[in-house]
Image: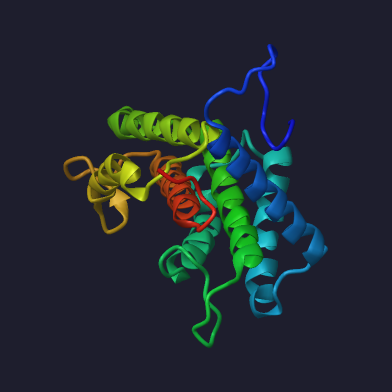
Length: 222
């Protein structure tokens, strides 16, 4: 950088400075917050943090030792634990027993652990039991959505939450296909439920992160 601007190899000032500098400032701000906290979580959310770490550590151990011998049913209890934490969120945030929302560091830390848990379950399911042919159309749609959302995140996010509307509509349409929490084809409940639901949850979290970043005061502006 020179005089607060990024330069091209030829010394010119490329477009998109405000977006890139804004992202850099937000990253530096987050680094400062992390360093200031020194690995300590807000005591109001210590119990939630400890339980999410326990789930993550157990799934990490399964990943190293039993990934190839697992069945989908072996992971249901861990998925249900994550879903209970997920369901306890309001407007995407974690709240304490007195109805106060988590501050930024606790929110991002808990959300990371939640997503990490879902990601490990997704990995273990993919490597232990294939998604049934009947579930492949839904699975492939979610894979495409996930790739698109990751690409949007890598390219700097969105400048307005309205830009996420098509993704949210598609996720909701897929989510509404579930009956009592499971995807049902006719009267059958095909195998691969955990993998598909884990992928759906990951897409929701990616969309939430993008929307939250766009709504932050120092986020990208139109």
